[in-house]
Image 1 (spheres, rainbow, N blue to C red):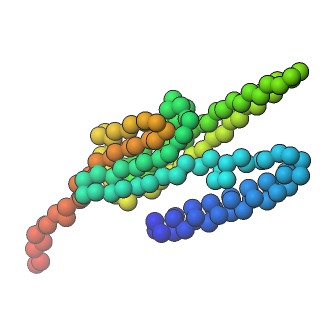
Image 2 (cartoon, rainbow, N blue to C red):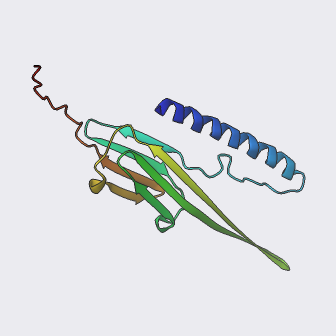
Image 3 (spheres, rainbow, N blue to C red):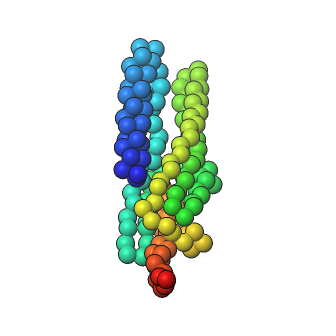
Length: 148
């Protein structure tokens, strides 16, 4: 099932990039870039797995950690947030102020169950690192059944 989700996410990502290219070509004639970031501002995420933990690293340059919302269940991680920026250009006789905002969200299906109460997250220099300890695998219980 996870292969289907990965394929669906890849196809949606490809369609999103195609739509962005289409809109950028249209608006380019008016001197406007509709989607300044080629990937639409969606953060890239790396997932590393060891015997005991899952670690996620995500790059969020210039984002205030207070503008992010991170939640997790035993098998799914949700990351969403907002980006804000402002550029000021001053010249003789005028001042141009451009404010940009955007939002992003990611839903990551985790390959195993994790201990939700023991998750640690650190945000440093634009990189979010989330360390999640894995749950112990369920052990099958053996039950003696008598046949009559």
